Image (cartoon, rainbow, N blue to C red; front, side, top):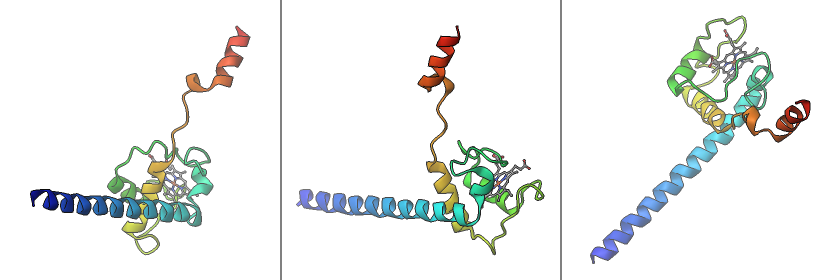
Length: 122
Ligand code: HEC
């Protein structure tokens, strides 16, 4: 009997985990779409690491800090503001989730071709 209850709970836990995983995957996809549609990429690059805007990867802001920044950028002549009418908190959260998935650039020491060139120049 205890076994049955235990496995029932396990099933429930498993389903919950799957649901959470599916939901967050969807948010990342939605975030990616908005990153393009709202032209974030134009100033921050598709990788979040180039263009005239600041590097967004690795993301150092909390989600709240990120949201505040978008609502009220310190220099709106450089980075436009995105009000809640344009992007809801949930949408901004999706964009944040997407940026969090972007990989950081490799360290120079880990780029073989750079190290080969350095070695040849010695
Ligand atoms: C017209 C160019 C432009 C667009 C479009 C743009 N940004 Fe920016 N962004 C900037 C610039 C420039 C800065 C640095 C501004 C400064 O230092 O005052 C910045 C800074 C930021 C920062 C602060 C980074 C940090 O850690 O200091 C975040 C976060 C950010 N942008 C996110 C976004 C997102 C998300 C979008 C799309 C919804 C977006 N930006 C669209 C130009 C842009």
